[in-house]
Image (cartoon, rainbow, N blue to C red):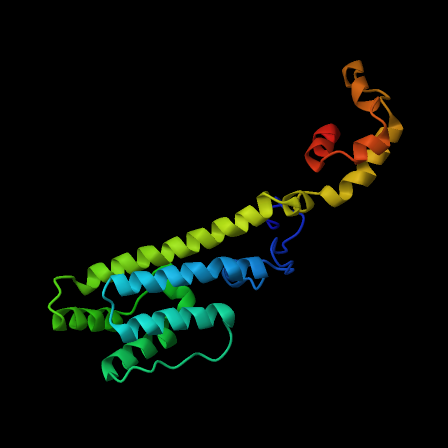
Amino acid sequence: MKRRKQRLYAHCPRCGEDDEHLLHVLICSADAAVDFRQPLLTDLENWLIDEDTHPDIADYLHTGLTSWFEDPFGTERVILSTIPSIRQAASLQLQEIGWYAFLCGFIVEPLVACHQTYDSSIQSRRRGQRWAIRLIHRCWKILHLIWMHRNAALHESEAHHNNKGATQLPSVITSEHSHGLDSLYRVYAPYFRIPLADLLNRQISYQKQWFR
C-alpha cells in the first residue's frame, strides 16, 4: 500500500516491523498475532482427527505448521513416523514445497497417496483427493482469518490513522488555523471559530474532516 501511495508507512500495525511484506502478515510475532493463530492450529488438528487422517500425517502437519509459525527460518522438525512412505512424502512436502506454499494449497501427490492407502486399510470410502481438497480449503480459511485479524489491527485502531497521516495533523492544522479564513468562502467561517486547543483534542477522524 505504501508503493501505491495509499499509506505513509509500510510497518506492521501489530508489531511495528518496518517492512510488512506478505509473509510477515502470516508469521508476525506480536503477542496478539500469536494468540490468534494458536486456536486456528488447534482447530486444524481437531479437523484432521475428525477426518480420520493417518495419525502420523496429522501429527506431522500440525506440529510442522506450529513449528514454522514459531520460527519460520529455524530448524525443521523431522517426522517421527515409522512408515517409510509417509516419511518420504513428508520430506518431499517440506523440501520441494514448504509450509508457506502448503498453506496456499500446494500438497505433494505422495502425501495424498499415503492418506488414500490409509483410508483403504481402515475400509473407509473416503478418497485421498477429496481429503486433500478439504484440507486446502481449511488452509485457505486459516490464511483468510489471519489476514482479517491483521486488517482489524490496522483499521480498527489508531494504527490506521497514523498510517494515513495522523502524526502530521497537529502541525498542519495549527498552520491552517493561524491563517484563518483568509480568502476562503464565508461558509467555512464556523470551522475557525473552534479554539485551536479544542480542535487538537478532538478525535483524529474529526481533525481529518476539519482539515479536508
